Image (cartoon, rainbow, N blue to C red; front, top):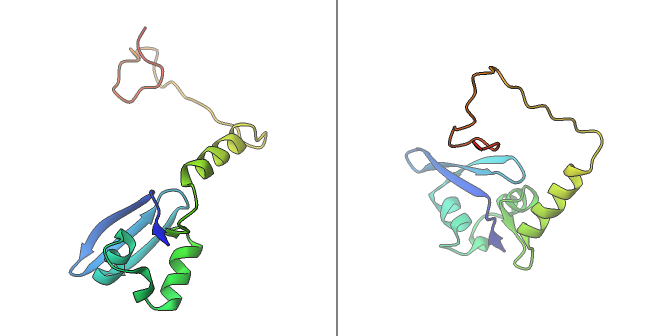
Length: 108
């Protein structure tokens, strides 16, 4: 088992951390040992089996041979051609200069 590329770990309080997997949308509270196992610093099999099962079924830990980037590509292609999804872009003002650093339109 290996940690997902899409794990984000945030300190919550003394010895507790929030682990968020951005690919699957799962979030967990773990202790220091759980954090180290998820980061690959200690062996994953040191965690209790019920924790191992939770982390694997929710995408925090994945099989060594799984290509997550391929999984993202498949999800993207599936979403792109799914006719059930409809997305809108709303322009709040005609004064927009399309020059915000996050703008996907980009100033011409």
